[in-house]
Length: 339
Image 1 (cartoon, helix red, strand yellow):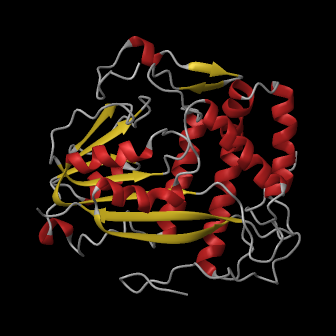
Image 2: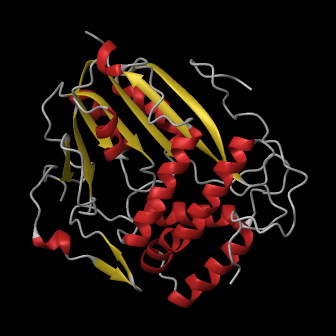
């Protein structure tokens, strides 16, 4: 096992398996079987609020992009679970970029652009101006006074001034971006000299250390179908492993990639990974319909009934007690040169 700069262990070796995991212990980690010239930061229009509905789930209606994830309350609950899970993975931290133990003192963060969990950033850095971006107006009714939300498509030309931000933070945007190098190039332009960027993305291909999840397993069939569907709408799920390369090409220096294993289910004997795995199971229990519905029904043309049958098979595969599945999380950060 290797360690991070602050000494915390990174789970990049084989995940230990809890051989005493009971077959019927009621573990909550297992589920039931049953035109682009438009600039960004545009004004809100009524059309954005006219959500697209697909079999009872609502989706964003930004005219400049097509996005696969719902924007309803069920999806928001899944996002909250995912935020907790990702924070556990980073030992309670919002980021791992080495900005310093007390960024407000050692390297004051006065402006932050956030594509992730904006409220927590604003709470942690009350003297910073935090701008959060979303495709849909799904923000909570109360937010910290130093936080401002903007409805925005990150793929459009950014209208922020050069050298505007101390920190740009992105997280789990897989499947929503078509041109990742352009995203990092725009971030580089807008970050102040000496400022930082961090991106936390997941690979959607499933693995195991003991051979219980193979390349031809149903879970990886699902991943390949999702990758194909994303390509049809000009997006990619195959971005995580290229993050470091793309940041370097954009001009960032001292770029570091950290890779983590994200188990699904409470099968690990490692206490931290067991807890993360249980939250990950809940994440997929809450979100599997949102992950499948638009891509398979709208993009791939499957009938609603075919999607439901496929989801039932996926639930059986995801929560099968003899499997020890995980996927990989890439956390990559880099700095804009001082001069």
